[in-house]
Image 1 (cartoon, rainbow, N blue to C red):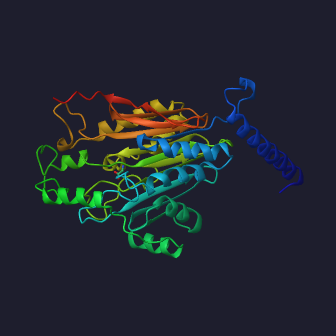
Image 2: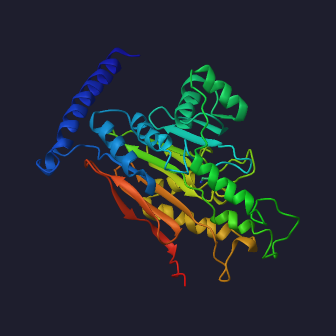
Image 3: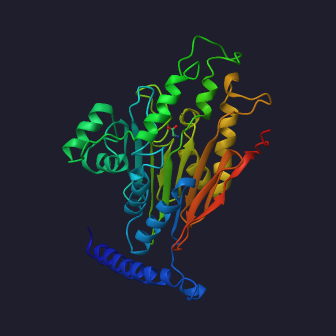
Length: 360
Ligand code: GLY
């Protein structure tokens, strides 16, 4: 590197470190300081509705000057470890054989890297394994047995992830199978009442997506899930697919999703949302545009109601480099969690395309 360049870089990074320390201090006193002293980068953490604790933990890390990826992973680990969240990690609802299979992805904006795992069994923190795929392999996505062997090689302990509550829920489903599974006989685009596969659209696809801007203005994100309840073994949703369930561009922002992964896999919405934001859309506008695209792309009648609207829901969450945030869903009623520097996170309503009519 040229000497003057080195010096410039050094001055820049020294100024940066000082600024980060100052920002961290300022954040503790946001109300007390004048607008002029506010941090150059507005930190923010956003997540799906189940991320109140996760976003608060992530913001705590960010206020300590930590990297956004460390922050969001620490946040979602709480949800992965929580047996009461039946859509993520330990206690997640299993596949149709009663086995919990987890998917996760991470993206680190400043280094432009990403990693993911899919159909990972017996390891309760797939987000940590996804990070290791990013940092300790030349690959981006590991699946199934290979992902498990990789996790074992890095010292992850195998454990039974199926709680009694999740097993009982699975057993109830198994005992009442009727036609509510995911196997469909041959059918065409006009077929409406088939296999009740549409019910899979309404089954649990809970997930946590969490994205953050840190004090350095760097952006990272994570998405982690046990996927669709009672899925066909090996089914992978959108969560571990970069561009679909998560996307980060450090120059622009981040986006992620929860809800029916099959719909989002066909649209790759997260990368689309980031591109919409690059073109000047707000995070909320970009998320709404992704919802519109999914509606337009959904042509199979079995997935549409009598008005031609999707029976399922997909939710998107986005932040941009300026610390602005927004979220949207196809259907009304979804909330997201957000933290802009407070000790406690809050819920806000997602924007939406269609208002759910009250059920009788
Ligand atoms: N969006 C999570 C999933 O479909 O697996």
